[in-house]
Image (tube, rainbow, N blue to C red; front, side, top):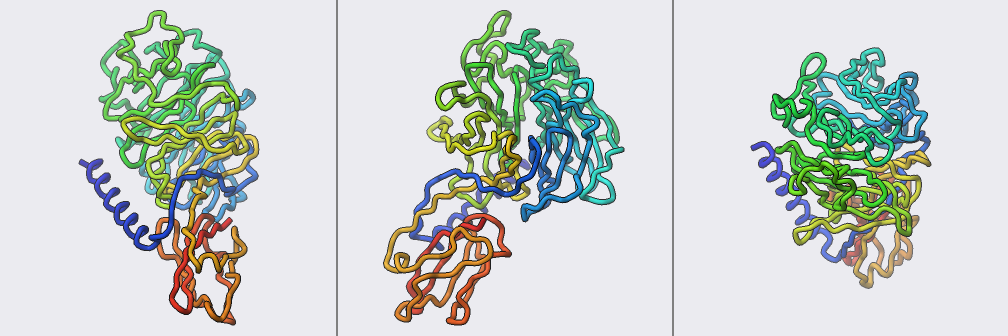
Length: 474
């Protein structure tokens, strides 16, 4: 019932916003063009981006530090959490790998991390925030799970809460190559699995009764689904609650899985299958029992693709053409990929290349998307840069400058015969931002108070002619 109500409200609001947008900007033509806009820099190997249902972004650095980034792109001087001395990050895929805030964080101050300890094993731990909301209490750690890692790679690392209120934990197959111990298909091992636990109690955790192997000695109680190689980033669709997983392939296919969480016990196929292709089917179950990916792409090629970074399905309001697209990346090519559902299947498109080795995506409290470059330490905002304006006499006469801008813009080619008397600014989704009257004494329109992004500027001349222009604020 809750999901149905939420979905109906969402589409009602979106339909209303879209209608307003069409009425306001009838001459604008749109097409999707994914780009990355630098939002902040100076981070060291960022591997996760999360929010606590407020304006802050929490940036996880692989060495064991979490920093706070505010809505203006400024990093707090004091880290939110520093557990560097507890974290082993000597191997490329080790470190502090995941973060998530409790659904009731506003009242209980709890958050959860996934890291590799000094012994090389996975730790799932709970912390609480101190009296200062920008600083965690590093003495509050409660270790919930410790999982032995046989090798130093394929650790997974993602943490996420489903709309069922349970904590989901993504774990890789333990490493090496080809899953030599077949951990991913072994239901007596937690490796190569998505775990689901209930952390709502005062301490420790319990196992949801709906987990598929509760009361069944064939599998461990914590297992929710299995058959994964290295699930490098999972997320929940904030609209329909479905789970998305980017699973890194061996040397053939990179795959994307998408499933509803009302069911459980999915077998995603590894090591029997790599994507839709057979890998090692010795002792494997029937092909009919496997949940195959909704999309895949080839490892290798030119440019050389090597490792998928799972992302999010876009549910924000700033870019209408992004609505419903699933965003992901390839670590080696620095391309941003999208999946669009059309005609009963998912269509894949690659954009870029960009730079920095995209290792994670993040969503802010408004559901706008971000990405992080592991090698360059830059946090990017994902934007749509395409906005074509139908030409008319007025739009040909005037230009905004500087564009892109930061603090202000002006209008060139002002003349007495067709003086601009009014400048109206809207967000890309059609929300009214400002209305400024122009005079010979006042030619500048201030933008320093506005967030980075794309805006629509409506120019109204003294004879009431109208034109629309795109303005980019960096």
